[in-house]
Length: 510
Image (cartoon, rainbow, N blue to C red; front, side):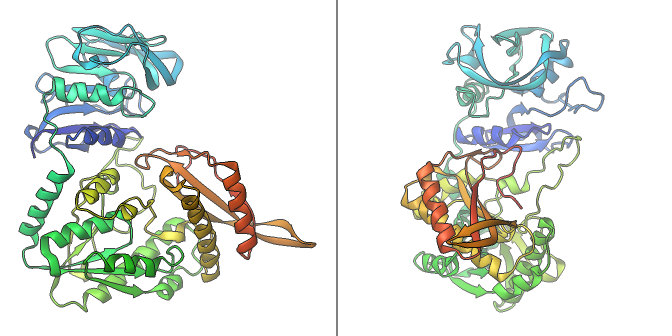
């Protein structure tokens, strides 16, 4: 692939956001850990160094080999990347007197510099570091400052090497996307050819070549990812695609039938399999969220194996895996990142299934999946659906799972989601759902004392789920929703609203 950008990951929580912003510019990019050798650097026309939780002054700080990159390719260092370029190439990085975190404003922007072309003096940027560059590297030229950071941006004379101490990838940086575009398009001369239409054409052609006349079985979830994957595969192999939609007993209220009805009108060959009891039996007595995920994943595989045997000569299992699920990121210790949660559709299949895996969406992000779906004419209501976790309500029920708890949460969730749609709030929210908490609280209904369950409502705004802010839903909406839940859902007497952001809290409670 031409016009690629390489992002070297040093463990920043924002690394995927850099990739997202680059992709939004219709430029293809890939994330690779800083400590893994890249097979062919010729495939990349520019390199970006990410931020990091490390200090460049630490003994165990990430130390990449830039010998085939610096001076040879356009290079942009972001935060840690900027400090690394200073620290190792003749500059100096020292601890800041104060931790530089949050909003700041650019000042003293140098004129006639491509990196800051069209960027207004005084515009907001986002800082996140405890060190600061006190001396620029050899041949360094200052490009911008803030009130507290003298060397907020610089370049190295005689090279296409640039560095910024702030984060252009977060939305708090007003002209962040413009700065990235200036670097990639005006400095690196990369063409903006990574479009949904181009992706559909190249992916369908690749699937035809890879699969030939082989049969493929695909697990549909009703969500955006698996649906877009199904339509791509259908374009490539038509009737040789066999779709299965499994009811794991942890879906939203009436979702099993609603999704089957939806797919019936899309020309896809879909079979519905109700395995609710099988999943609930496997989850009986399990409290640990990771063990829940593993149990759901195991039964999911078993159901698929059973169904695959009913289709003769199946060679492939297709999955709606997307790029955030498979990125090999870097942890705060410099090694492989710690597992926050397991994905039942990542990591291959057990040997007994004897199927090869095909993942047509493996290299794209969620928002790109939606754009690809729109390019193929998939219904906007389906593409606009909120993300829903693979384990479903199983990870929104804290503690053990029973059929009764699922029923309660389905009813609560339905009232919440239907209410968001009724109030025209659904499309303003990135993801929403209800959590059933493992606590009871005292209540009064009529003259009777109750001791029943507490549910938490959660609604967040985000672009990719990596970071998220809670949504300030109208008080009247919350009031109406709470009253409806308590009055209509037996077993619930208290409703709370989650106002924590990610980080530090995750979107799901688990």
